[in-house]
Length: 405
Image (cartoon, rainbow, N blue to C red):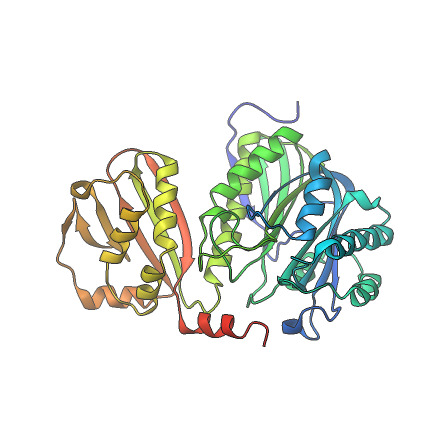
């Protein structure tokens, strides 16, 4: 049996400088191919490869208009296996027609030749400007220069950045009973971020031995608690992809320990995306407790963190708590005014629906911090959820008014 049904206490340790190649058997490399104008002289084309064939599962954008690499990767993942992924930044290869699909397929074929895999075992991901063809001459020559290594995950994390200001990567080492395994991950995302996979690419790896049915379930649950609880600006893209590859080199694992560790990795990356939102100066965390169900808690938390009015108030350190309750009210979840509690920066402002006196200057100072916590309790049930976002600044408008100029 590949996993234990018994609940096993897991010790999860973050690996210093850990990345997507920290699990045994994973290699990566990147190069500057001149695709990403915002990364001139830097990395913008990368390959992630497992020396051992992997079970694989992924979640993709909910957009009805999907980019060519998403369509190709969805088709190839129907068999539930993959050996590598080739990824570029600077060009989304979205809304590029049949030519775009042909380019995505050629990227996979070229990467496959370089690492000795069948093309159908290579997935493709792209991020960047929509509606622009891939510069295939640059990609062809760039792939020839990529050298794979066990430390290459750090290069990959940089190569997938667009308007990101920092690479986002993590790895954890897990001990659970007699089991030992590692999970690593990298992600990118800064703008066009909203629940339903936001606008992001995320690649997760593990040397744990998993089953096909379980890997899909574990990934879906982890994404629901992490990436689907992030919002920056209410927009999504046709390129979103979260991929999990498991090569089994670490042996069998307890299911609950793997799920716990995977969620921890995904939450870390999700919070990193929220804190690095375009123009962001603050990370905002919205926690809802006491909702009628977990789904209702998630819906309410996402409504608050998605509110432009709330996020603008946070940016200006304006203690306008009415915007928060207004967002809850329009979320459609069950809520009773006479039972609602609200705290901002751990300062109570509402109890059982009644406004509380509070020190305005103290609350303003809390709102000026780098991290702002908003806590709601509906006092209706046991549903809980947390969502993450960032403040809405003038810089966000500047970045997105000059994206192609």
